[in-house]
Amino acid sequence: MSVKEEILEQQAEESESLNMYHSTQAVIHEALRKLGYGEAMYELLKEPLRLLTVRFPVRMDDGSVKVFTGYRSQHNDSVGPTKGGIRYHPEVDEAEVKSLSVWMSLKCGITNLPFGGGKGGIICEPRQMSLGELERMSRAYVRAISQIVGPNKDIPAPDVYTNAQIMAWMMDEYSHLREFDSPGFITGKPIVLGGSQGRETATARGVAIVIEEAARKKGIDIKGARVVIQGFGNAGSYLAKFMHDAGAKVVGVSDVYGAIADPNGVDIDYLLDRRDSFGTFSKLFTNTITNKELFELDCDILVPAAISNQITEKNAYDIKASIVVEAANGPTTMEATEILDERGIFLVPDILSNAGGVTVSYFEWVQNNQGYYWTDEEVEQKLKKIMVDSFENVYKVAKNHKVNMRLAAYMVGIRKLAEASSFRGWV
Ligand code: NAD
Image (tube, rainbow, N blue to C red; front, side, top):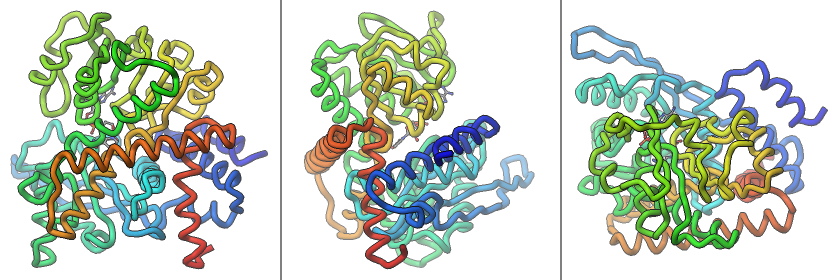
């Protein structure tokens, strides 16, 4: 039985996040095999080098104490320090954090950044916490993980339900612990604390660049192209705006509670104006459709930009788009990827299409280390070059090796880690 077959058999019994983790390992195995690496390299790269689990008490507003569980996973530091976001969500678990850290390594490999992948998370429900509780929890988490993070060790950033304010509290806490100002400890900060121009919109900007490249390859004109986007948070909302500004028609968008659709294009500026800080807007409307129906809408380009496991074997046959661009991490299962391939739908994988976020996070870290700050135009120009080159590189590998874009992206992403690990004499 091949590694892939073994993994598929195990998956029937597993949780969603473990399933996702094992799918990732299966693609890593295949990518390393195609690149000519053996089992020892797979053993090294299939798991993070380090996973810290922390439990820490936080005083809540009503005077009670709640003990939270958090994680920090560092996949591989052969190329440089590890880097990756921190997620606040009730469904955070060990397997999810580990998968996300592996994907961060692959993204840094694809975009040729001098980092390996890291990721963190806290099991919590931030939408039901006050600002004071969020601040105390964020500071306590930094104290709990402070031994293994730092500007030259592991650099966190925002992810789902974390934002610039939370990064600012974390930077402040870390700076107190070290007794000197440490802006390079974390990225995604407010501009006044050393944040980079363009970081807020970077992920969406990167996805928009990749969509243009993919559309060009498939002979679709962005002007007038019909786009559907799931999720209206940081990634989805700015992407909707960029697509609209580029002349595309955003015919459907959603949040966690529902979706709205309009074949003539939804009013993006109205939604941007009225959505809340968690990216929700659908409660403003009565004529909503479900997230399930959103995926079945007639369109040219479909962008899952919310959470994982959204395109599965159950709905992959209903998708009408000819291009799927993954802005979210892990939105398509392994089985669904195969169905989309069979149906000739061009899929641009997450580790390529949403790498704009980590790219501008890297720019932020460089600027913090130099104490010299770039303009918005400089950031945009440098981001564009990296995203276009990365897309072209992955596309070329896909064509040359006759593999899909996901496997090609894994091959490009993992190669750098494998080479660095070999040169260091680890394998
Ligand atoms: P966010 O928290 O700002 O927004 C999430 C959006 O998804 C909200 O509109 C929310 O209502 C919606 N949503 C949540 N659960 C949903 C569900 N079950 N069904 C439908 N919609 C749901 O998050 P974000 O930062 O925009 O991240 C979205 C995705 O993009 C995540 O997978 C994240 O890992 C990925 N990503 C984000 C960045 C970044 O810089 N923000 C970078 C790389 C990847």
